[in-house]
Image (cartoon, helix red, strand yellow):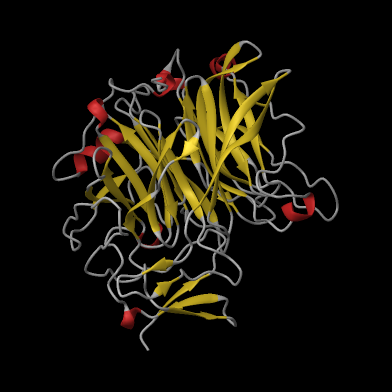
Length: 457
């Protein structure tokens, strides 16, 4: 039997699997215009990278994962990037890639409890905290099943002081777990994306090893920030294939097809969410509720038979019997998602195709037609990007280094390596460099959208 093995990985990496020939969508989903599946991805290099972090005891168990950008209103060149490091908490970087602040994840509340583990992050602007408009960094704490909230101080940024301060209310409840015992089972807050609607801040959170999404609304009291549940959505974990058979993506025993990479279009309030071994979903958000989801593209491995090798703890994909129901743009895992905004509803949705170390580009408008693929390769300032988990993009000028916008991605294999130590970091790419790499250049629009003024209600 010809097969590909999908090993377990703490970064949820997957081996590359050959592409199939067609992309068939779920009934009721909008069609996606497909480019030539044999076309090579365009190449771009990063202009800046952050220091490598190491996932071992000497490195503080640091494993970079997801970035977010905060745009400085007074001096865009002073804007900062905040990145999660899982067990090691998070780091704050300047646009030169240098570390400005480190925040440790919360300690375990008891000897048998799980410590904090920071997974995904997003930034929102202008939350009313004690009568003052306050910008916030929002982090999913997978270890403790909470959302951690940090106020961003522009004055501290200007003065070169640590800019993030924890303003999480002490009483915030677990997002998904019914008890602290359940928290320690780690089916906890995982992916995260935030948006502002008529002055209110909402957070979409996914659940580790499950298909459930929650919509939370932020609340403020006595200078601290909490949250409550606004809505819940369960996405399918098993699918009916065109031949009438039922298919479930391979996972560790007892696990289901989870989501991690997510983003919300700040103008249309559309959630784009990557179900890692299934594909990319589009879910409208209206009046603080989830609307009907549609699967807009699938991973190549969708519908392929598999077995689970218990000795090796890995999936064995039967590529010889691939029925051809998958897509041609995403190799599992589908991961980090971000939206580039341009005028008149145009722009792009970018998705990490972790299994083949590339990124897929879709149009933001209409039925999200596929545009093309890119990869971040070795360059004079930074090495290539592999197994990328998280990404974020901003269209506005950020000073001389990034005069026409910035794309930040996680790199799952930072170089140079230090022996057998697992190294990760973040790469900063000029948007205009990426845009011009495509045969038909992508749009560069630095004026039509301001992330600090994205609430159009």
